[in-house]
Image (cartoon, rainbow over all chains, first blue to last red; front, side, top):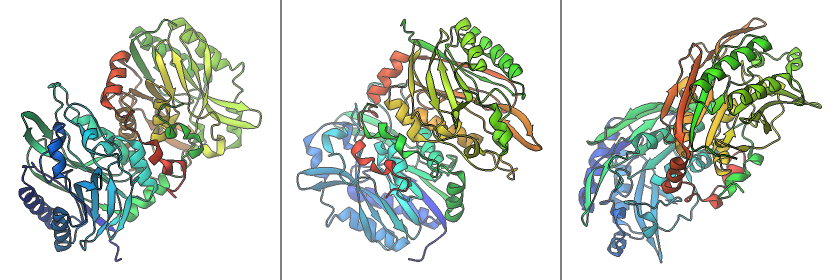
Length: 291
Length: 291
């Protein structure tokens, strides 16, 4: 594997229709634009095949899930990754026997599927009824070695958990990426979590001394009379939690930022945070309520 | 215990001389000012008895350590806490038999010492030679119930570790406080970690949905010809990681921010982050290198 040291991380942001082919076309157009800007890894938003159906609890939406084996959207994204030589994490609604997962397949720059990660943390609240649809992921956290470094991927709600980011960092991740679908909260018109969302992930970047990128959807979607507006604001944070690239709340976006892996590796070591951990004191993390 | 729901968190910031009595006088003056602004809990910086001696490795500085039993600075701070009815976390260089700790005694609003926390994570790098002076803390993380809520305290370097913040949150903390001494890095005149430092702790606030306060020193200190400038920038973050109060890089400061514990408790529960954790997947956190 011919490793690349200076790596450009890319993030795309767009509104989804509820037509799979249309969304693949939009994603392809933006991935191509990111590749033209030099991106080596391109993060596309969560469940980009269609509307964010978890707005409601409706058995009909289980029809959206497919097995990963022979998945046509995955095949299209693999072809895209190979064509542009980019690593593409692909977010899909997976069906496997009786189980349904919110999954991500890491596709490398030759179009090979490196493996699957299944969302570990499943939210549940008005407008985000994911516990109705998804089994809690059974893969544990995963990282993948690619030509462009070792990449750890979480999916949306995972992004709020320092345990997930830290676990991937400890497993060797050099970049953390999060496909996302987040926006307004039904019944709370004045509530906005955008800055909270960013600060929490920028905190993961700062604490783990590595870039963090999130791709969120935009636009207003109506699902059986329910309405939700996604706040975009996709971003790339640097290893000190600094905002390197940032999209607006509306409008398509292609973001890129370039990082030197060797410099970041030395800074991580010299800073000493991974050296000075005290795992023997972290027992509370293994329980639900601190004992 | 007559519990208070609306609690005002206070932070003070000042330059230390190398005279213990003078520093106690300065701390007392600022704690009084914070109390006059309604503060119920006042965070004073790390090792405020004198200069930050860890700039150099010098056996003479071990003379600064004292047993906590009968510690005159602790007694002075206990009297201060009782006089103004404030909770005061007191940072001290502790000697205990052959061991030396960077310790914190939590003093309640009646002046009672509730217990000791000993800094878990000990840094080591140019200008911050703490591994020369301090045994790694043996207490584990601690939280204390007070009239003003349950308070978790870390000490400086601890503030970079998501494990510490999360552990205290899981143990019931409602507020996280961090006495600090951080500033310039010898040999790296262009390096500044101030924003990195803030973002990482604001991330803890956002991830744990609770206020985080840090008190840092200011001023330039010369220790046997070595010079270091502390960057102040003490702050109080709200439960979404938002900056509620913020001091400059220079100049004394008294910061306060008021929080409603009952509202924060409900928001923490409704947000679901503590409900949706997956401790069975957090095995990597128990090791040094992700296995």
